Amino acid sequence: MGKRLVALAAADDELDVVAALDSPDHPQLGEDAGTVAGLGRLGVPLRSSLEAEADVLVDFSLPEAAEVIVETCRQRKIPLVVATTGLSDDQIKKLRVAAKEIPLLWAPNMSLAVNLAMRLSKLAAEALKDKDADVEIIERHHRFKEDAPSGTALKFGRIIADVMGQTEHRHGREGRPGKRPHNEIGYHAVRVGDNPGEHTIVFAMPGEMIEITVRATNRDCYAAGALAAAKFLVGKKPGLYGMDDVLF
Image (tube, rainbow, N blue to C red; front, side, top):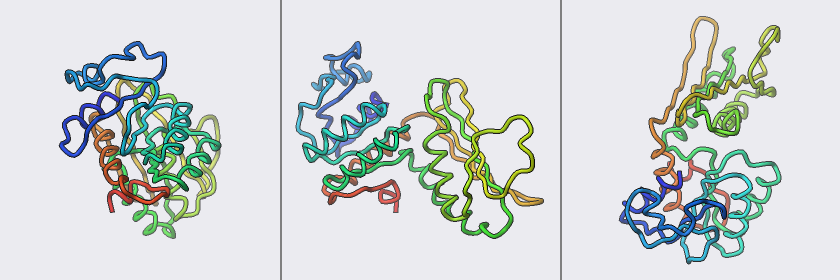
């Protein structure tokens, strides 16, 4: 994701890449970020800490790294886009505290199509909340993804449950779980190959069903959405923003 962020940002006339960050033990630390991304030199070395002045920062990393980035941006008053998933409750709390001091956009998925699908799922939930509908969420990702279900799948579930009132979130089924209760949403995580991300939301009633499916064909959609979020965030007042603010 870092490589694609650098590549797409470098190709965008509205953006200048002024810093590229990675782990202190990254084997290419010190090399030019453009070269690492396969573009040729940009004059921006890959570093483990932020030394440049920046108008906005985008974080696609791991929870532990995101926590450091949030604090860095809070201290330096830099707007921040957080695209990292798998954050703990304590890390989310720190993120919300930081949003009182800086503009901070946090979303489990930066894809514009995914966020539009979330709006469509909410619309479907509102239409079907009293129509005897069961809801299941199936997500597919690459074999290297560390969290399951995906943060995006869980976000879909929260959006739907807030409308339809489900109180149980079941992660897979095995054995003899018995009759499916109406107050649950089922999640099913598939990990295969290099799948960059796919989510299907199933609303099923007796005799009929509707599915909302959104899939990525490569990772550029996440980078493009994050950069759109970064542009949106510059100049905004402190607060916690989401991709709905970018889209609508």
